[in-house]
Image (tube, rainbow, N blue to C red):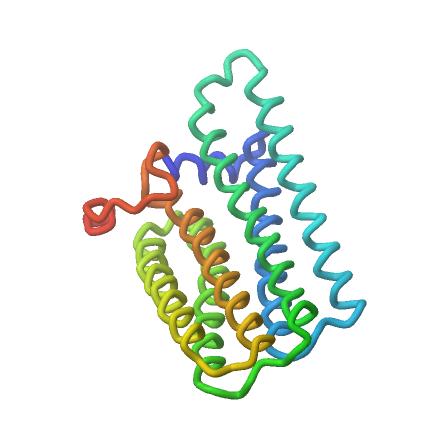
Length: 228
């Protein structure tokens, strides 16, 4: 079904216009994720940087509402009932993209809350690697979607699940560390927000390899099957 959806997205029709808006949402959240990461690992954002994050998030939210409105309008037209499965898939995907936008905004606010900069130690180094993995995934997603690349999606899902496990292990390490309270808060929030961003990326990728009723889940048998 996903290959058919991508084909429809590329057409000059209402679903195609929805696809264009979805691509815009992905692009905005990709830029937000990278911008928020730079802020989190350096210093509290300047007023200009904070405004840029917030304005981008507003655009993402408006695009989500616009796509919802487009879906409702499209399905209200007689004869479009065959597009219900594609519309349901799209509604699920845009919600995950919107949530990524929220978590990037939260990530950019961490240093404001903790009032500290991150230490130059092994814990921060591990979190930087997690950041790199998340940013690499969100950069790769657009190409995976454009090409309906199931093999690429499966590999990204495997990497994303590994990143999630690394986040869990890092949280345990932070809990047992001797960092001061402010640093512990910053590291914990950063790790948690990156895990949540990664989780929503996995949900989006599930739309490439899983049937509609199994969105957000990963059937090991499906992931191990040869791609067609």
